[in-house]
Image 1 (tube, one colour):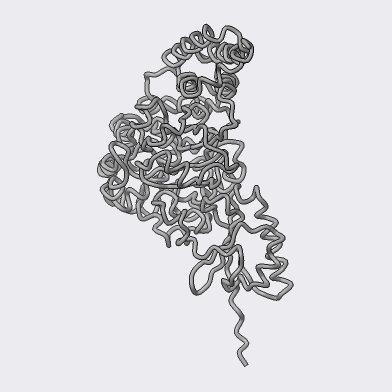
Image 2: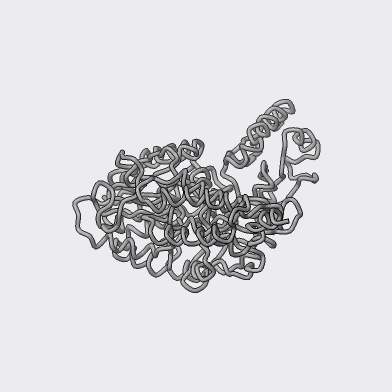
Length: 523
């Protein structure tokens, strides 16, 4: 008689916030209870999300044919799944097959997000089994100058919004003499409709740790800081646990990977001020001060955190570095178009049927993102506007859907890629109200240091309200454009400087929304 124990069946269920928000914990509880009642041994591995949010909660079962997915699973679906033999990959209306074959994933080029939704985010064994620390080992072998050259040749640009070449920033810090240098990760992800930073912290935290370690070696920095948001408790908890594990296993601290190199990492959480996403305000906050923008020069690369040379990069930029060092500059630069090399994690949100994270090479058109990848609006109504680049990004009408997703192409049409957010609105949206919101948002989030932002945004909201009330519409539209010019060219940072983008694009592309009250009043 064979008395060998039956190996537990492994299931993979996300604990990413997107899944938790739609009941992932209840699904886990229902599956666990049902399996216990049946006497079926199972092991549930909590992963990050693959980024197909309309399919959450996504449940994957390990079978001889690969991981078979089912979704979106709700607790009431669980009995039917067990009856259908889903633990063996059985047929069911929610059966999706192997996620690798799903069209939404198959069309992507996943470099930065290659592990998200696949590995246990706190398992170093999983991380290294999927290529983790290959980049750091190569970096240690080739040395600082070659690391900077590799990142420069890859064409990697800042993924936080400015698109500044990462290699140039690193070389500036590397060439600056100082007794102490720092690496600062900007994970203060405050743009509406964006979630890429959070997904990495919740789904692949060791990738960020590795990227920051490589940056430290490249520029001679022995200390790093991750600056996150208080609104991200789950991500913060996972990130802290990953840092502790990296220290425990010799991947942080003195003598990382037995190399003799020291790199320490500290995790900090801000109070949620939007302006602290601006690099100098972030530095002020890290130093324990009020988050206010600094005048430049000096640049942070020369005089940053605690007055020392500092690399400040967005989380996605740093999390992409291990891929570049592992596979080479040419491999990464082969993706993309023009000066926009590599891939971008596009975050599709708003009134859209298929929202989530889609990583692809630069060059896909905005129309392909919204109508093809996003599959149009969730309401089924026509798309009226798409805001790209967060709450300070321009609104694009369908007539501009031929715009390639590329830094320079967007700039030519007075738009921003920003952090990669794409928020969709159908034809029920009032664009005058959206313009007012942009001014109100700036007024609330302004640090108050410069007059164009602090006063201009408040006056701007008042002017838009007059327009919406049908009062002296023509004169107030002229005043609004003049005010936007003052904010754009006179503000100390991008908060006030970029607020005109959504306002002016709304006026330019949707004039009827600013004049219809005036027309109604005239009748």
